[in-house]
Amino acid sequence: MITDGKDWVASARFAASEAELLRLANEFIATWSRDQLAALPGDCRVKRVESLEDLGGLAFALVRHECSLEPIDHPAILQAMARFFAAASTRGAELRALSRGFRPFGIPSMTVSRA
Image (cartoon, rainbow, N blue to C red; front, side):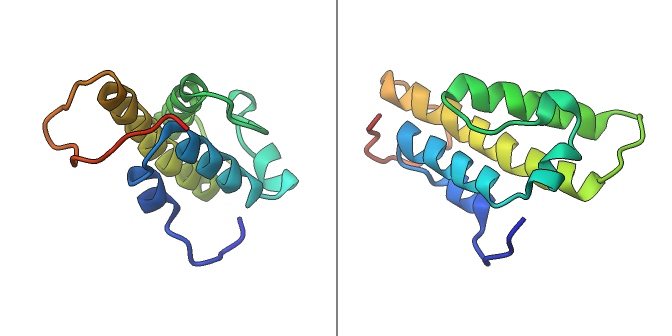
């Protein structure tokens, strides 16, 4: 991962639209080298995120492996990926709920666009 000083988790948590969130996820993936991505378990290797469903599935797989008792070759990579994608998946669910007119407790009031 390129250390550019960007707080990727905070960026995901405050994404204003689904499109922005997907763009951020793909930018985040692009910061990792091919070798770093290859070090992840097979079901966690992703090249591109196309939908909120992709975000959720990837977050689940990463966290499942992170919580597993099986040894992991590169735990720091897995942890960083899991942290970002868990935050992105949560924000995606919030944005989807807001776009449907549901305002769950604790979500900041903001204009939501799907663009």
